[in-house]
Length: 109
Image (cartoon, rainbow, N blue to C red; front, side, top):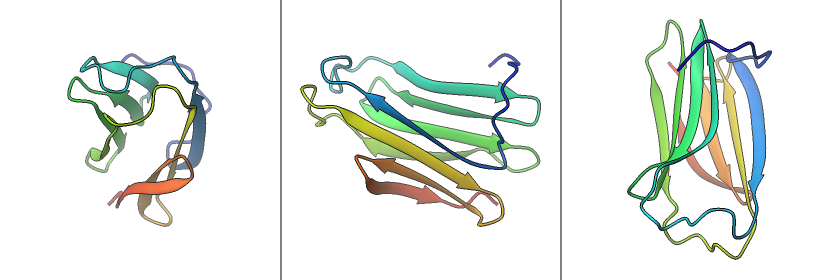
């Protein structure tokens, strides 16, 4: 990932976005990047891999890289889907939501 000038706080924050109906084939075994930010002190990457797993990679120095994942192969292509990711070093957690449901969680430290 290359250095980009984002004001995003990698120590604590939330991102939320929609993938609209018929914009992405969730079961096509193709990698698609949905969100990416890279700074000197860390990075967040959200992508669907070639096995139809949605993966979140989170790293803020000095902590190790953390990963969250959820199988999205059976998501309907005909429906809008909302994704949200929250992270907090203070609360020591990263949480991934899909359509208002918590689908994955891990510790930062």
